[in-house]
Amino acid sequence: MAKKVAIVGAGVGGLATAARLAYDGYDVEVFERLPECGGRNHLLEDAGFKFDMGPSFVLMPDFFEEVFSYCAEHLKDYLELRVIDPSYKIFYADGETLTVHRDSRRTKEELERIEKGSAKQFDKFIAETARIYGIIKPLLYKCVTYKALANPYYWSLIGSIRAFQSYWQLARKYFKSDKLCYAFTFEAMFMGVSPYQAPAFYSVISYTDHVQKIAHPMGGMYKIPLALEKLSRKFGAKINYDCPIEDIAQANGQISLKHGRGQIKADYAVINADYAYAQTDLLKRKIPGFKYSCSTYLIYLGIKNKLKNLAHHNLFFSRDLNKNLEQIFNEKIIPEDPSFYVHVPTVTDTSLAPAGKEILYLLIPVPNLMNAKDALLRHQERIRRLVFDKINSLCGCNLDQLIEVEDCFYPEDFIGRYNIKYAATFGLAHNLTQSAFFRPANFDSKIKNLYYAGASTQPGGGLPVVIAGSRIVADLIKRKSSS
Ligand SMILES: Cc1cc2nc3c(=O)[nH]c(=O)nc-3n(C[C@H](O)[C@H](O)[C@H](O)COP(=O)(O)OP(=O)(O)OC[C@H]3O[C@@H](n4cnc5c(N)ncnc54)[C@H](O)[C@@H]3O)c2cc1C
Image (cartoon, rainbow, N blue to C red; front, side, top):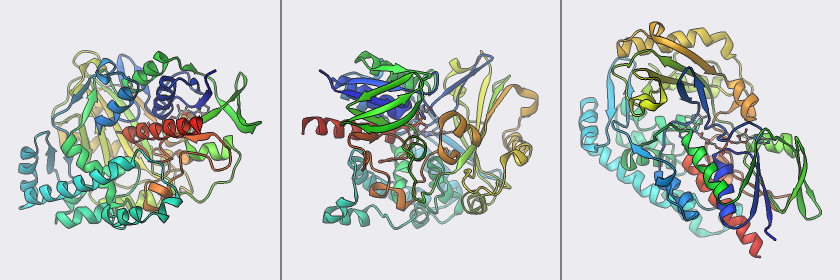
């Protein structure tokens, strides 16, 4: 009889694990507390506008391909990934812009406009990040523990991936102006960490967005979990929605999971729910003093007209990025002049809004709720006004007159909706002491046959990386089954 695997959570990590193990012949059952799949990769529909509420960048498309080919399927039969051009546009506070194109020759022309000689430096920066990516990529499919430190191979890696340098320091080595250093490190914010704290090896994200390019799934980001849900079901995985797991314990060589409708026993269990939440609330354990990523305040606007001057992805930088980061990560107050991100998926994909209309999704990084010294609610109007004014002045529009629908998502909603500890949007922070073997492993050290797949465990957060984590878990379970 097939061994039973219970998966807690139908986020991208849970579904990718379910698909792989169902394909491998396990009897897979997923338990999700929400009425639908996707977790943070969720969809909000309002008056004909389809807002993707969480992720918006598809980087490293080969990681998406891999989960389908693992199951002997083709990604293209499930998802249409379209490379976008331009990749993104940066708006500096003084009105200057930098457009990053699919064609790096055009990007270099833009760079030269801001800093003479930077086109050459760009090539060197990309060559260095490509070298680091070559080392890191295979490691993303491995769970490494402290035992790895006994292996001299890993010691040699630490230096070669520049573990002790920050992402910012690496960029500074190549670019003189703060403007370009910001442009080549902002990606750290998408992992919820300051580029001053993220280790230099996270610069592989810059490599992937400049070299492998950025894709958009036609029909919206929500098509990604839907595709994984379909893949899992094709191989027989059963998915229970509105079915929260309340307790997990070892029981006579099996794992017992108490859920809203009763109790089940499984040979293996995989927790996809947020790691820190699972430790405290499902396993009733104390957790060490983890560092958490920032939180985010999200505003979703349905706009009456098409807008000019905005690309599919847009970044608006604070006048003083250093102060902005300091306020989010150290002072833990709501920033005075926040940097923010604007997603306009309707530039590429008109199916997401009624004809002739536009979607604007605004993401504003704010402190997480662990010891936060300030509450967003007190600053909400100010922040909304500030970001609207900045968009209006830099893009020549009047948002207030164009809004047809407006929705938002607060830091507290990350706890209420997804059970994310301290509303840390991206889970545990990606600093040096919580990366690689320092990040929670994909298996539990106390409960036999209990595993973890998700953003706060190895190899880390972000859709492609979470999908790689699901491969680690599938491999660990298969190895265990055959031992
Ligand atoms: C605003 C935002 C922007 C982002 N931007 C990007 C981006 O552009 N590109 C990118 O690659 N990544 C991005 N990310 C990160 C990416 O979305 C996450 O890393 C990824 O979706 C995490 O997936 P997961 O499966 O680990 O967790 P989750 O998506 O959190 O899924 C966990 C699931 O577990 C469920 N659950 C929790 N508790 C229980 C319980 N007790 N019982 C049953 N089920 C439970 C939850 O409801 C949830 O569905 C972004 C994230 C956010 C929020």
